[in-house]
Amino acid sequence: MWLVSPAVNALMAVLLLAGVPFLGYFFWHKWRHRRRLADIARRTGLQGSSARYLLISAATALVVACVLLLWQPPMAPFLREGSPQRVFAGLGLGVQAVVMALLYGVVQTGFVEELVFRGLIAGSLARRLPLAWANLLQALIFLLPHLLILQTMPQMWMLLPLVFLLALAMGWVRIRSGSILGPWLVHATLNVTMCLMVAVRTAA
Picture (spheres, rainbow, N blue to C red):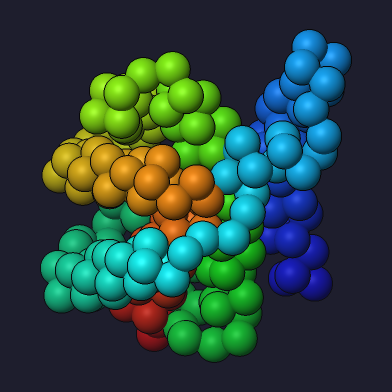
């Protein structure tokens, strides 16, 4: 069944890429500082956010989605071997494409990357550095793995400045709000939009 593979991929990403770092962080703070789970979760951004920062994030997500839809990038780079959007080719805007996009964009990449980069890394940096320096550093760290875009789709290098600017915006929201909810919303919207854009534009 088509649902099994994307669901397993999302679950494995949460357990390994997010779960392992979180457990390491949890055990360190439990052993070293005797902190409670609720306090540790709060420090990693796993808490609610004020309406102000959720509205800022929702507006940013809407702008990002509109830019992607209006930009209409060439599809060839997204269909190459190694591109995560390749599996969406030809699906159209159906139930399968939407569910797969939500699993990939919201869970597999959105939640996992926000917990690690904004929750753990940005949160830790913000407790040690001034906001501007902490935000800049977390954005640079976030950009590094995204340089792999150049390996699979080098002509899409123009995505990298967008990734960096969004990382700065999401980092600011995370540090100011103390939550990863806003950044998660923006990240998920970007990834889901890209996946569905490929599914629709490559449909027969």
